[in-house]
Amino acid sequence: MRWQNLWLLLCCFSLPVAADTVWLKNGDRLTGTIVLLEGGKLVLQTKYAGRVMIDWKDVSTLRSEQPLLVKQSGFDAEQGKSLAAAGQGMVRLENHESKTLPLASITQIVPPRPFVEDLVWEGNLDGKLNIERDEDRIDDWRLKLDTTLKHDRWRYKLDGSQRHETKNDSEIKDEWEYNYDQDYFFTEKWFVRGSYGELRDKFDEVERQTAFGAGPGYRLWDSALGHFELIGQYDHYNLQTSGKDISFDASSMEWDFKRLLWGSRVELYTTGEFAVPHMDSVDYVVNSEAGVRYRINEWARLSLLYELDQVRGLGETSSAREYTIGVGVGW
Image (tube, rainbow, N blue to C red; front, side, top):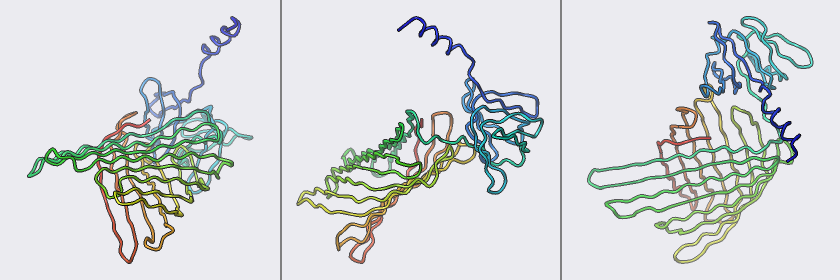
């Protein structure tokens, strides 16, 4: 490295980093980065106290150098290049022209997400342990992972789970599953997906299931508050049983929804797939889940998950439902 480049690098690190500032009605001043305003809570990421939630009614004014999407009562929303303090109970939206807004009229503030992103990694790991000591001794534990890596126009998603259960020291369930999706966004809304998934169950009639598919996807919305996407795919399945192997094709529609509430403290989410196998004996298959996560602190979560697996064929419907309560980590 040339010495002048090292000197330039050191100078860059020594420059002050612009921070957002929030003035409270009691005279206090907080600095950090505005994450969002939602549900009457302003979320400020600070270096000294982590993520701080501020009641919007206690804010006197604020200032931010980052672009922000400001939504007022009703459906009006404006994006500003920055926000400037404008006296108690007011803020000035800086764009091509300045516009002063009363804080009481603002219901939501969200940083817009760039279409092309640098490396972004996020995910959740949830665990559940169920111990019963009645007539039978049952130990049931489960781990569930979902993680996403974004870079430029590419997105890589991996979700998986592992479950192990014993009854009176005898193993009765040993199952693991994973699904990998790779997306390429050719516009801000439209993308194409390729996927591969595998399921293994030591004690089920279907010992191994593999599936791969491809198809288009559409992003209805995506922001700091969450996202909603629909994906249509053409899939091919291979099922291995102790007797014979079965292969078939299917058409499917997937959904992926997440919404943050109460200043990002609560997360609602649901994912699933509705598939129509290309065979006469099966009408449709539904694999879905819906859940709630509660943020305890910067990384810890409490979670409640509901899962529904349903198969319809030959005039009959078979359903399996499960509720899971656990703890986990998020990043």
